[in-house]
Image: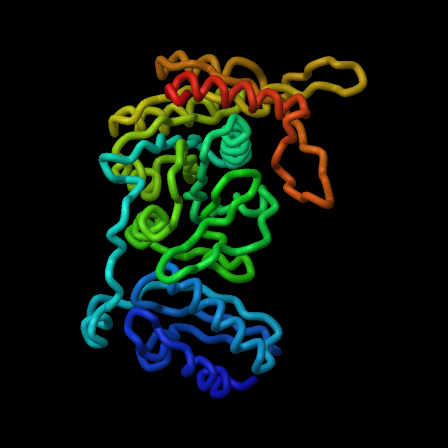
Length: 351
């Protein structure tokens, strides 16, 4: 395919909110084509919406039908000047019940860490599944927008369904899931600035059909950056689960994330110490490969409770029901997560 042929094909695709071709709006920001492997950056009136999902699927289908081998996509929003030029977004905002409304009965569980690599996302997905196993209605937002991993961890290979202007999260193990991973193609990097990320997160709440949820788990990015701050400001209140390893440095850095939650008037639910030890299957002996005491010290500093110590391990892989990070309830670590979920339910008074 030539660049001219690609643009001709893209001219058939409309920005749903402007009812104009993405070529005519100047929405084709970048176009690269190497041996049929097409890479695009597309600007739309709105991103993170049901309409974006429809557009990205249409682009992939159209270009592959024209002979493209692969299609990589990134999205950004049109500038205010461009929106004004083309008549502004015509889509009416969703006016139905919101998870963020004062009448919402959903408990928000933010899962945070001071640094990456401590297993925060693993804790997030297993906590969500364990809560669902207790009969709770659970959703999870993969809010780690730069390092989204929840769909892969849970073995999700499908995309959310779009009905009208609403996105229906993918359900797996009884948990409703939404992730930035659903809005990019071919594992493309997300190169966005803070304000745009905040809009995306807000649309995860407003554009998605969550139904009635007892719990919404939010897998936060590590640290205290824009997305974590936006979420703490956005939520009416949340319970924070802080993940650390036993290592002194990890616990020290995690204290900053906990302090931010407290300063923004959110409640510390407790601390989870991940990778606490390695237990040999042959001898049963425990080896404390990352040291000891980080979880206890962190809980003491933040005046909260150490809720669980989770050892190093790996779920048994089931090829027929593939989910590389989800522990079966019969697994010893799965039982630890089950006990953690029961303790969380007690502490949040969901009975």
